[in-house]
Length: 423
Image (cartoon, rainbow, N blue to C red; front, side, top):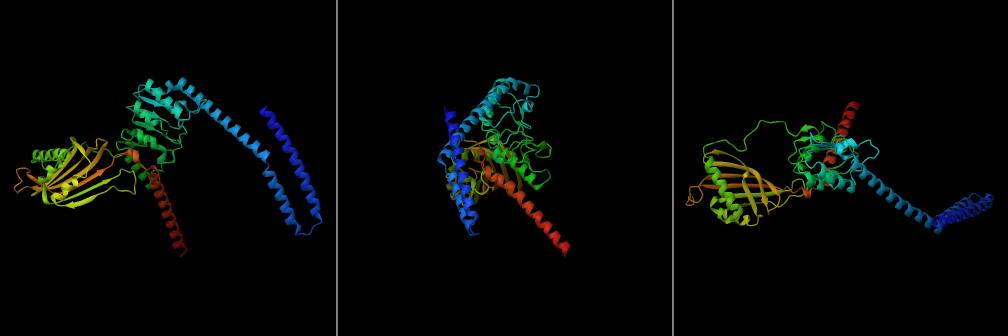
């Protein structure tokens, strides 16, 4: 019934078009004997006739119906295609798993009768389910040449079932920006050991300034990563002990001082007043870890024991563990320089990275029995480790701007060379 109506409307439109042609022929014959100025009239008539045809409501209605029908047809075909790919995954997934190497090699499914759409969420959830059943202990996964443009949201679910997965290869795909790997960061930020992105638009040519910036951004997004594109993140260095002390003699007293300090800093900061010199200086700063390159969180400096303790009341609650701290110090009598790096919990949330430096002198006042050492300077810097706030658009701009600046500099250099040659 619908098809018949569509055909009838089409026939009526053909008849109307034939009448329009006949009308235009008459106008042309009439205008042959006109002067040159009549060409404008002819063009106006012709244009008017053309507008009339375009505003044909019956034609527009048929075109809208046809478009709606095509959209439904495309949706149906897409669903059928995804369903076929899921069946294909069910049948062939086990051939991708190398149990000996704990490797899931999805390239085994390339160039088959079905090209898997790894960006589709239904496909992704199916992969997550198969991994949880067949190979939950995988350590590596290979997506080389899988035509991926964006890493899907389902990677966050993958992180929940594959706890040992630390190595990823997305070599030779179509990934062009840091925004495209956002869900990989959110799922595996603190776990990835090795990542391959070479052969994608996101990865600049090696041995360029843009490539060095790219590697730096990747290492910030994935703090524990060791290998990027097959190259170690840092040259291998000799193994060093966790704490290095320039002077071994006063180790016990220094450790005791730090343990007592953080015990009160985490529980009752007002008790720390006796550890600061009356004219002590304190500075505090907190910066985002790549969350927004243009925004810095509040920082302040203050002087005086009472003002320092007052500022402590405004800092968030913390929890330090001595085993998570790395301590170094040196002594140039009568001054001690103590440097501490490590992590602590803030508001019972994720760990925060920090650096803290104390300049300390021996306490020769009446409070020496409470604290044998006095802090004269305290420098406290915290780096936010909340990767869910990363602004990937800004991150892409940083790399792109660097590339554009280099191109501008090269053009300027070329122009200067040409000018010199002309002179």
